Amino acid sequence: MKKERKYYDDDFKRHIVELYDAGQTQAELARTYKLHSTSIHNWVSYYHNSGSFKQKDNLTEEQTQIRELEKKLRYKQMELDILKKAMVVMLKS
Image (cartoon, rainbow, N blue to C red; front, side, top):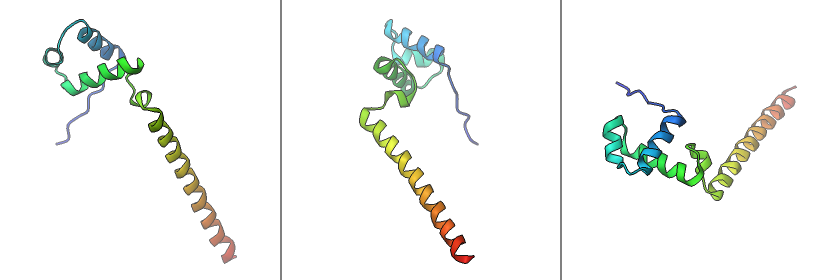
């Protein structure tokens, strides 16, 4: 049976970070709110790094550049596939 993934809004995450900053431990917060301690650790880390809980906002400059280059590469490969198919169609007619 597949476990359902839980989603938490930014206000809830911000509240957890504030409680953590106020002195509560990850273990206390995990028990109280039935969260995984790794989630709490990630939320605190992300929020302190960039003020955002989104992973894409917490990437290094190199990671962001790699993602952009991979996106461009996928686009160029798609263009090449289209041109190859067009060439086959043109040669058949």
